[in-house]
Length: 265
Ligand SMILES: [Fe+2]
Image (cartoon, rainbow, N blue to C red):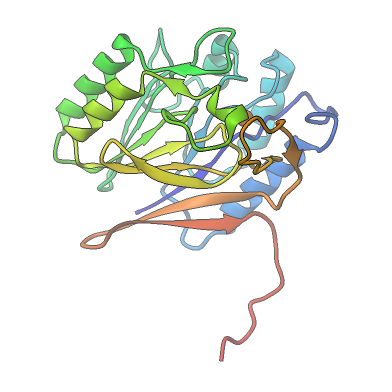
């Protein structure tokens, strides 16, 4: 079973640049083209938040236009740049999307993996919060199929990752989430966005990853107090490949066409 992950495309109304810098709409379209060219095709594509940049209807109209080109099924959760009602309209009909309230996702297909997506956004804020209501929703969802392997998707990582400017806007409530995950060892990954770069660390007895953005990267500045900045780095996506007996392997794939293939020997 193959599950792809793209993140933080920050799409904007047609013709507008993201951060006045790059055409995030065209960059997301390039990600979609990379996904559509995969062989085998992914069984599912995850979009881990910040679908759009400013949350306007025009942003979401453009997002719908770009995402409609994707061949594989799509499962999205909101990030801190999304607007709840605009998001709900854009993704109406998405399997497993809660009809009202928080935009959590509970997805079960025919394959071995199940996907749970958490909406941990806080209105008007850039940080997230895993509160008692989210804990209750996730605990109930995990209890429904405790032996099935799960990918848990959420936008802000529930822990610091060592880049100060983004750690200030992480998802708070990490202790209650870590304790819940420790009781569910079948959670294979916590898959996040928000950081706009690939990072990985242990969390709650499992592996937490943050996916690269399809647009700009947040500067890798590890010095305490460093000013935030963006870089136009090569964008990328993740492929989570489940094989029976081996479990889950995650691959990092740069977006776009690159020279090759060449003979290896
Ligand atoms: Fe973002």
